[in-house]
Amino acid sequence: MPRALYLDHNATTPLRPVARDAVVAALEVTGNPSSVHRFGREARRVVEEARFAVAELAGVDPSSVVFTSGATEANWAALSGAAVTRRLVSAIEHPSVLAAEGCVPVPVTRAGVIDLEALDRLLAAEPGPALVSVMAANNETGVIQPVAEVAAIAQGHRAMLHCDAVQAAGRLPLAPITGQAALVSLSAHKLGGPRGVGALIVGGDARWRPTLRGGGQELRRRAGTEAVALIAGFGAAARAATNDLDQAGRLCVLRDRMEDAVLTDCADAVVHGRGSPRLANTACISMPGVAAETQVMAFDLAGIAVSAGAACSSGKVAASQVLMAMGVPEDQASTAIRVSLGGQTKPDDIDRFVDEWRTIRARAGQPAFAAA
Image (cartoon, rainbow, N blue to C red):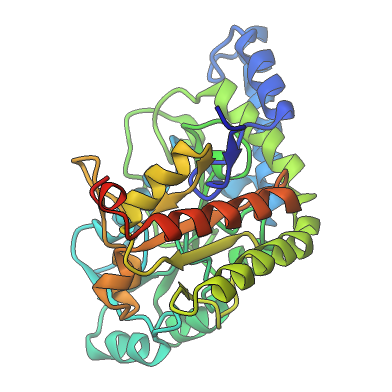
């Protein structure tokens, strides 16, 4: 069995040892953080130390951090709780944003960037309070969105801005994002924390009301007893992630080396978003004539974990809706995989991926392989 090689960090990043240790230690804390006795105060201390760490990573005051069960809840709470009559969201957002009731999609350019002129027109078309939602960086292509420009347009129409910064955390400075957006979503497991915990950053002037009520937790902004152990792991990962920005240059070199090798090997291959500013760790590559699902399975058999654009409930892989929104032809969108590097990715790992990519492409014309 070949050595396992993990190149799917945008889906989830392996748990950091410091986060694991924090979770285990917090599991030994008995009290409910809402209790006033010493056991409760100890649990509250764990939660508040983690809140401070997340706030420090985000460049915000700790009082603005609301812990959630993950980014999906944070996104849903942001869009559902905003005191607005219209919600305009970029066409390449996460499904938890696109599925929000009454959302109006804003088109993106072929470069994978939100169409700022279209956003301006849509905001001007109707009066009334509005919310604009745009992610900091796309999870499939890695394309970084012009948050400052979006914020300026939103402000010009007195609209609020929500930013899904899940992929940006630990990869881009967050203060410029949280300084522009009234609401910001984060997730622990994208930066080496445990799965099942995230946060919504709520700015002091945000016109927002809690959507999960029934208790006084999180300053009455999210009811339910806090998941102390998971929050502790989130805090530990957030502290460690402040050092990850130094990895960007190294990962960019590795990503470009991988993309250059693929494009040299196959002139018809396409790297989506290559001409736009991108996360240093992310590549979205179409292999002509080979379905994304086939590629993912072939790489998995070779011990390499990558992902494809969109997984549907049947377990099959559909053409990426992100790429389709960018105007990518369906035959290209359905042959695209995402390769996302991490802090432990080495040059030898890139060479191994490229070798396997060439092998899969060479086998593509064989009937048995094509039917896989």
